[in-house]
Length: 290
Image (tube, rainbow, N blue to C red; front, top):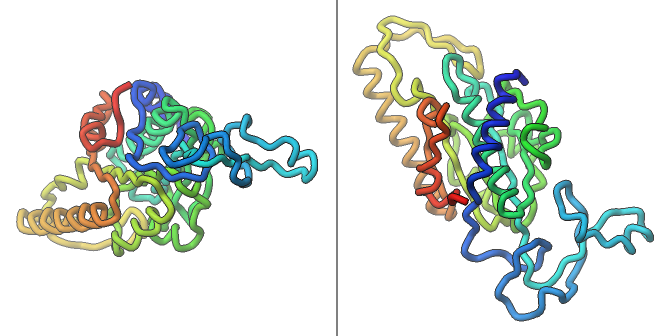
């Protein structure tokens, strides 16, 4: 990861320190955390155990059970909720489009949300969608310690989810950061993401080139992910057709998000950086000013 990317992680963590995540109105019960639900029963009523996961509060560890089994487990209590955020970052090549700020904006936003989660006493974990979904090195720690964030892989998040789905925290919140510029069924993808989640956030990161491609005349287009080349005439008519298709594509994603109850926002990298303009994420009820 370049020093430039590391700086955007540091900037995102700093900016995110001024926000908190907007929690779902109805939180799941029966899992460990710092938030107490409204169901019948005392929050001190023991219910069950589950395996320890990186980022969990060590005060919840059942040390007696560890002494017997040499395995870390957490005590679960009735009506307590999991304050946890799983972040899935699209690590495909389209996210590092040459001449754009998509990569910097995307990893910076992941840091923003991780810091906002920590502000609300919530744990987090960063996952990378590449050749399958894998946990980022140090993904449960401070964003400035995250490693191996190269956005240079060939699979889109939908395929990565099918190859190797992440072991997301049941009942937690989930965030997907991607340009969403791939073929596939948005509802099917979001259905998998939303399964077992208390809330789903979807942030589409586009570049200025994605929104408003230039008219180049006769040009050779090269797919940044596959390397395939296509010779075509990029005139005003082709530009209008592209804009219409992009609008339909985004509406499909917005419709699917509404169907699964996800909150969706679209940001343009060059408008987000360098001032870190997060007003739209606040309006979309994803973040709240601390």
